[in-house]
Image (cartoon, rainbow, N blue to C red; front, side, top):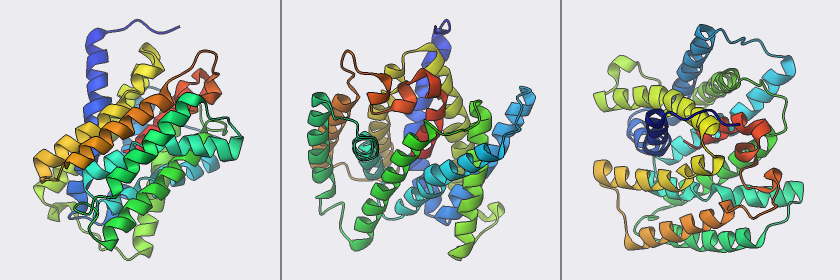
Length: 325
């Protein structure tokens, strides 16, 4: 049974998951122009994780977990944040933010194939249509010579695809794993462990760390917005919406985020929006719509976002959504 709605809060929460999450591609793109990518992502998630634990303490939520839960949080933190997010931030050095957002919007296709390969789930007819449209959209997106103009851009596109595989496996793993039931505690541990691993990768790669006092104003603003709004505010808003509106309505952010990212990248960074990109976006997002369309009688576990739509594990979906951004 869903909680009564506060219309103002619902509108503000949808603004957060639509616009704020859509803007994280732009913010990461701004920050990575000056900061090493793995250091950037590591600092973001460690600080956000600490703030989430502070909120949990204020709310008198117990943060103690078992050894198994800690290991699972660490593993998922690696899949979602260390690899899944950190490598995307690295790829943004070579790929436009709007382009990256459009590529990532094909995530449901990857999850669908992972469910087929790992769980033997049958692909429904509506989803098959979505897969075909999605493949066409991705092909149109990455076949543009004016946007994919050099080897590093191609490598960036390929690495984002690997990140999508990491997110997909993490989404399937976390739906069944023994993780803390409280979403603040769960996400807090994932952010801190994932962030720590990001900083370790940064040290191994020899990234040059700089003090925040040396960062430019745009980068400082971008980091603050990523930590406070991109992680905590949007995360809390997403969790609130899961409780007061239908999961299908919450999942509409899948379609809105790439459009927001494209428009912000075009307006603030002068990124190109070609006619082919617009056509690719329309075809790709239509494909995602077909994949997310639920047929009568389909069980919760057969939906492409099992950890979003299943009541038992709906809170766990927050991590996979956070990792996308």
